[in-house]
Length: 617
Image (cartoon, rainbow, N blue to C red):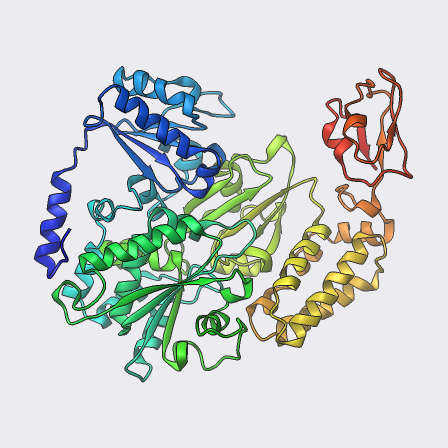
């Protein structure tokens, strides 16, 4: 494809691409994201292509290699269009049957269909599956329609139309006003209004300005940005080019962690393709507007998700935050005005320009507009990535989209907003998922991580886990964060080991307030959230650990004891074989016993027993 010199050339190219596409032609879309790739989707793709070649169907059937479809629990996922058939957990050995039965004969393969866990009904179409039916996938839904390595696929679904519209028929001021009217807020951190942020940067004095995409996704359990870049990198690129035009920036960077090899591969290729066609570079689409986009690989420091730490890292310095003001919009990269948004924020921009602020602002709540992509993980039946309108309830997220708690156990809490978020209990399940309501509960939206916990989760241990993560990820520059989090973690460790004192709860609260009030950046400022919310909503568990010296969930090793119920033990010997310290004794087909002096409380016996004879006290 030749470099486009103007909008007429773009329109001609788009029409040529669309003319070559046959909507009636069978297409087998296979997810090859990091998740489905781990399940073996590459072998599935190879087997499908082999079966197609055997039958000389290369010109009659397409195999589309896509990014993540969201339902990661069921990978590898295969979609067959135009019939919209959804197959899951597909293996290479299924390829022959898919081609012979579904493609050639038109038959449905029942064993590959999704089974509704409540009704037992087999569901054929993707959007009839509860996981998808309750979503509104205006961004993430495009993943399954395109090969992320082919720019023509993105153009075919309307890609770069928004860029052409923005730079050819809108002024920078009109673009910013459209983003402001849409109500788009940053899809990470505190949710600052995006249009206002752009306006600050545009109005800042200086001829040289930069824009940056923060793709340094480091929350435990979060993989939204990675999957969006893997599956649709051009949506991010198009949004950034529009933002650069609106702000007056000529250069941009995507700051992405080096642990994302597939995302890096696809992003690098997409930037190259966009440049070759003329969507970036000099005189974009014939307009006096130049813009180049580069990639900067981060080393995986969680603190570099903070804007000023990210800037320091980009400049080649240690990734440490600095005091604000001045804000990056005033004095950012190399002391020039700089606008920073994350992946999901930039990907929203082309949608708003194409479909208008009025359309976008109708989605969501009064103050939280549009959709949000969450990673829904933990003790839940349907794990994966979900895109929902702002304002959806936690209950609907967990029990309708997520399919409820695994093994029919009781829901205990959901942790939202990453390691600095908060744990929300069962009485607040009807809470609206938006910026204001989550903050009021003591949690936060963050970048969209959600971890579901069941009755067997110890909330004191959860708080300790997140404090341990934040302690290790703190840059150490400021004393409240460096020392305060370390001391809080030490107190939580004592509580989990049965060494806690009743005065510890008051001390934890006092430390939390000091850290929140005096830390240099948001890592420290929000670090106490897991502790404060677990004390607020699960104080009884802290009391049990401190006063009764027991862990109600049976998690904290120093506060539990494993024993065997003689009435339930059949003497099968499985626990004895798997015990790493020979702590289980007994004759075959006779009830066994646990030698407490040897038991290291690893839980292998509990997990191994098929008769539920091992009990935690």
